[in-house]
Image 1 (cartoon, rainbow, N blue to C red):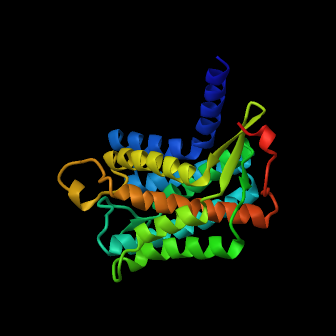
Image 2 (cartoon, one colour):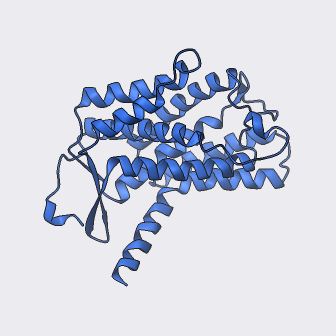
Image 3 (cartoon, rainbow, N blue to C red):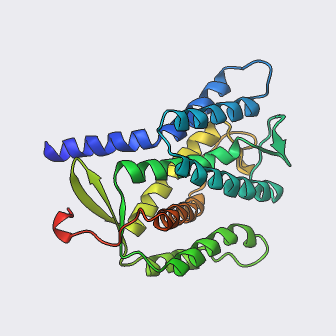
Length: 263
């Protein structure tokens, strides 16, 4: 029963941390079945995301520091979207006034929602890092992963080499978190895989509701290829490394926790 209670507590904290992504998915579903007046669907999604972001800061659910992190992710994601759509990796076939080179501005919030989840979960679960690699190593690795999303269209795709490098760099690293006053720990690499897997599930839901469209989904919806899981895994790693680095810069991370407290 104690383990079950802890699992419920953990699930509740995770659900609260996912508030922004839940609103995005709910909006995708709503606008798919209900035709809203005056504006195209993509523009309504942008308005909903902006209002949600304003409300989260206004209500205190997100701090101004977290808002800056989320805004950074918005621009990082939007830059990636502009390039990928230009290269034909996926498309946004519906009309919209607030589109840049075929990319609706609301798309950046889908990346920002990942950052929102990470920031919320970090604060709610009192996340701390154990044996975190040196700053320059983390920055170089995150930069290489992000750049590979662009360069693999012209040069060799080194995602699997980068994935192996992640395992080597973070082999001894752990993330610790608190649930109900008890601290637990998990290998960093495992947390990357778990978050990436659930984002892949979320991607299937998003494409089902027409958030965007892969070339193989033009005629009818189909499951997102499992190969995309590696892309999301690397994107999660970049996201986590950015958030962790910014947390460390702000002095909110710790380098260790007493072993006796870890379960």
